[in-house]
Image 1 (spheres, helix red, strand yellow):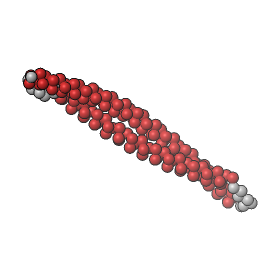
Image 2 (cartoon, one colour; image 1 turned 90 degrees about the vertical axis):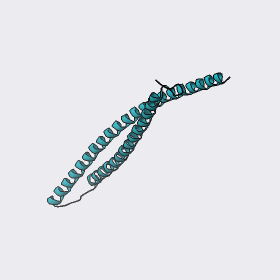
Image 3 (cartoon, one colour; image 1 turned 180 degrees about the horizontal axis):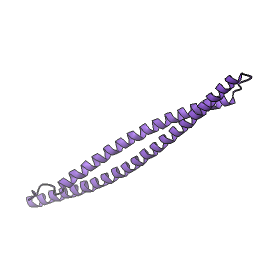
Length: 143
């Protein structure tokens, strides 16, 4: 049998506090993942921009009169640069998809955190009312 001076929902209060702490940890991990994904995306944007600029520069430059072997080498180089730009664009799309996934996780973690905090506040308010009732009962018994 529970002691009359002990909060009857102590175990529930402990569980709610643990859930809120776990939700905070999950949110922190999701935010860290999102920050890392944003950094990876920024790096991918930079790589893509450099690759596109290099491909554009070789395409716009005039090779002038040159032997066939030099023209074919230049064309092969231009093709390689365009391929690099395409790969950089694909890598950027992958980083953007990864970032979108992390943003979904952050939104879910924030919702979980909000719910856990609300549940904990309900239990905390109940505990405060219970403690007030206990004090009033003790005061009445003492009179």
